[in-house]
Each structure stands twice: as structure tokens, then as C-alpha cells.
Figure 1 (cartoon, rainbow, N blue to C red):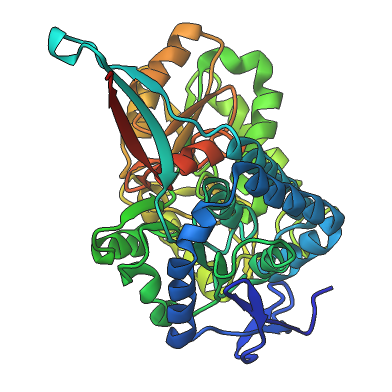
Figure 2: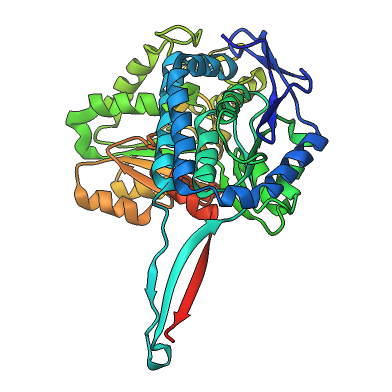
Length: 477
């Protein structure tokens, strides 16, 4: 269970400044714990500490940074059940999904530990013409400096880890603003980091309301802003960020193509589509939202998908058989319910689900939803998936691209040439063949194009953003 209260972390140390932030159990709606809420003065102090500690942190040897990250991975393993239950309570995440996220948290820190000692530069042959004879070049990567991280509610542990672990691995100081709806996982992370010998000021974890967190974006002492959240907020922050580097992961309306050659594999395909569309109650930026199936297999796929969806258990996320828990808030559930009703009024057909009770929304499958509806054009971020029939593979690929988003896409096909064509033409950050776009492993480059953001996460790729390339040229004496 959760502790009755949690501090924020300022310059590596816990501070029980107040109990102003109430964190609710997302299933019961009851207050589960209280958290210290940072004000502008505390945020300024955290940024100042990160600025002052930047040189000391940059001088920490790679093997010590590796050891800090491995310590965290070990401690997370020891506190596995506590972390999973915290996710279940504060985020409403079904307990099986919560355990999966803790596993990924550990993977991410282990990956950071490994990368900490192998983030190398290169030698460059500068003798491209006679005038460069006798010159040698080499590069190394140096920490960019203090970083600002803003993480979302849907993966409170692992999406914070994808910012924190690379920063430690590269020798950057940082301040983190976890989502005010789900701060507990990040604060437990802070509790573990406080056990290490990182330089004082290396990190601060400061829950704050959005209106009081302007300094996370605008303060010029910060050299990088990494934000995960909604497109509207992300692009607004980029406009305010000034000269600092900005990395944005902003979500999407991920699509999946099912080719006509999948007739004999439909049971497997459907099982993956169900997971991709409805795990974590659909509250994932790479949740399967749009399915384009060839007309030759469409009817069979629809029948199996609806049957499988109807079997999903909706309810208390603490129960082992629950597949769909509550959405993050009643306002978000009402918003999605409104989009579903709008789609029905516009001519969309509700195949199953669609019922709402408080923050619980049934797993919902629809077809023939007009292309102008928000369920098609926007990010649903809830347990709903849309089926569409296509006459050809090329039509399906074009339909995937007919979106302002471009994060990941999935394609089920046995044809290598079609798989490669999807990789060539789909306007997304990642193409997954014979898998749903919702699949991710934590060392791969992850990010999108168009309104889905810019830059890439994945430990090694995030480390590139958190470092600057520094050149050395030596002329032979």
C-alpha cells in the first residue's frame, strides 16, 4: 500500500514541505495519499541546484554512473510489488500491466547502465585533400548540461525512466516534473536515487500543477526540455522554450494494416489487436486506434475481434482477471464517451461496448466511422478501436498516412516486398511488421513525426540529445 504522505525531492533530498497534492485511487476515487507540492520558489531552487552541480556531475566517471543505475535497477527489483501496486492505485493500471511497467523500468535502468560506459566518439580521417595532410580529427560527446523533464500520467514510471536513466548515463543534472495525477512512482524513484552518492543538486523531483511549472520550460539555465504529453501542450512549450533543445513525444492515433494473406493467422492477429487496442484501457499513445483490413478477410476479422473484445473483464484494476481498469479521470471518460456518441450520430456502427460507468469505459469496437469524426482524426486515448475495410494494400497504406499523427504503425503481412514498401512509404517513426504498433522495447529508437513530436527516446538515442558533439583537431608537429 501507499505511504500516508510523500515528500518532493530538492537537490537529492526529501522535503516534506506540505501535503497540498491529493493523489486519488483512480478506481475508488478516494484520496490514497498526499504529496508535497512544489511552488515556484522550490522549482527555482531545484534548477539552481542542477545548474550549480553541472560540472561535478559531468566529472563523475562512467563506471560510477553505471553503478548508480545498477543500484537503482536492483532496488526496483527488490521493491517490485510496491511499485506495481503504486501504479495500480495512482494510475488505475490493471495489476498485470503494472507489473509489466515495473519490468520495463528495470530494463530501462539496466540499459542505461550498459550505455554509460560505451557512449563513445569516433576518429575522423581529415585528409580529404592535400591541404589537410597531417591533420587528425576525433570527437567525443559531452553532457549538454541541466535538463528539464516533464512526464505524463499514463506510464508514470517508465516514461520518467526514459528521461532520467539517459541523463544519469551521460552525466547531466536534471529536474523532473511528474504528472500531478500520478507522482508516486517518480517519488519512489527519487527515494532510491537519494540512496546513491550522486553530487548534491544532481536531481530534483518536483510535483507541480501545470500553471505553476513555467520555469521547467522557460528558465535559460536549462539546456534541454524533454516533454511527453499532448500535442497541444507540447508545441506550446516548444514555442516558449527559447534557445534550449526540445524533445517532444506527443502521441497519435496509431493504425494497423491486416493484409489479405492473413486468413490462416487471424486468431493470432486478433489476439494481438485486442492487446494493442485495449491494454492499459487504451491510454497509450501507440494504442491501436485504427485498423485497416483487406476486404477478403474483413468479415472474419470483424467477427473474431468483436467476440474477443466482449470477453474482456472491466473493473477493479487490483484484481488479476481485470483487463480494463478505469480511465485517468471522469472528465477524460466523459470526453471519450462524447466522441463515441458523436461517431454513432454521424453514421458509425457500434459493434460492441460503448457503455460508461464513472471512470470505467467498456472496450469498444466501431466501424464505418466518418473520416471527419474526432475518433478518427484525434487521439482517442481510451478503450476504443475503429475498423475499416480496404480493397487493396496500397489503399491501406494511404489510409494510415491520412493522419496528422505519425508515431508507429503495425502491418500484418507475409509478403516481404509489401513489408519493405510499408517501411518506405509510411510517414511514422516506426513500422512494426507482424506486430501491433503498441509494442515497444526500451532500447529501440522511439518517437514520431508530424504532430507526434520530434526527437527520439530509447536510452542510447536519448543520450545523443542529452550530449553535445565536441571536435578535436590535431596537426602533426
